[in-house]
Amino acid sequence: MTQQTFQCFNGRVAVVTGGSSGIGRATAQRLIKEGMTVYIVAPDETEVRFVAAEMGAHPITADVRSVRDLEAAANTIVAKHGAVDLLMNNAGVGPLDYFDQLTLQDFAWVMETNFHGVLNGLKAFLPTLRRNPTTSWIVNTASLAA
Image 1: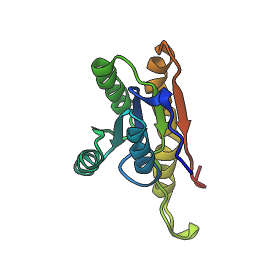
Image 2: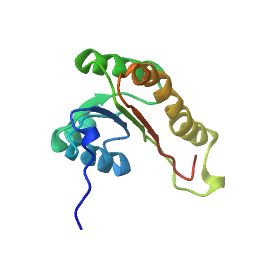
Image 3: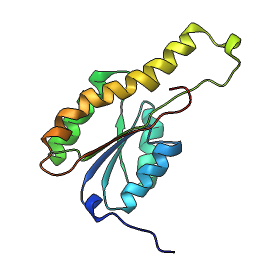
Image 4: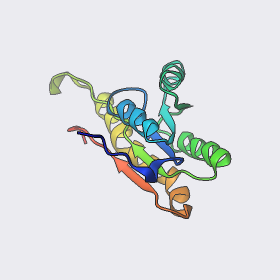
């Protein structure tokens, strides 16, 4: 069985939040294989730089809980490439413990990252995605915590 490639991705620009691990990392690697220029977004500067160098992506240190961080990321990418073609809102967290062991701060952290992080990504990148003269894509992933 041969793998299908998507020629429409070749030469395009993608942003993957949560791109330094898990589903985001795997997706970023596949998008690079498809010929996209990929920016991975994560809050840990050391980790995002290491992973980006390892896979051939571009690192962006930003916290999805901050719309300002994501707006700055969008502005940086648009200044360099003129557009963003694909946004994958993928960053997510989830403390693994029994309900009665979780604090209200734990729940706030989950909501700020998993819910507001997607809203912030959309707010920050939607203007450039809409201005795109060709097709653009938004992919939102979610866990059971969503």
